[in-house]
Image (cartoon, rainbow, N blue to C red; front, side, top):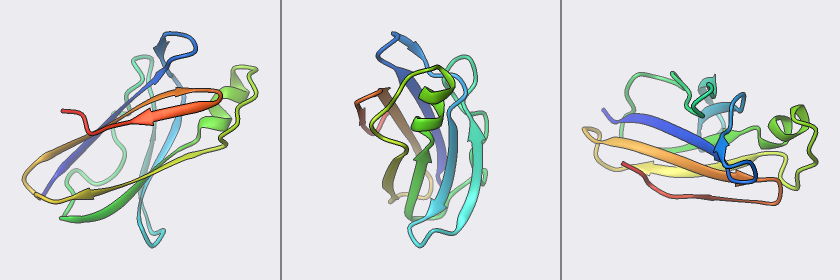
Length: 108
């Protein structure tokens, strides 16, 4: 089964985004787990230790993160759907965010 990690960087500040709530769910909306980013912008745990092949969604509470830092943001949340193809592989989903945009890619 595949493993999952993420890393969130606040490009408006040029540093890791600490305190971003993250949830992992199926595309049908069933909750699989949650976590919060640490001082390095990483969540120690998000969901199950391993994922079966299939489609999933990570939801990042970007609006709450920016509000807690006194900043108005355009996106209240960032939902990223992704596919686990090889259940023996590692899947890393980094997010670069700022109050008015974000980008993501499959990391290593």
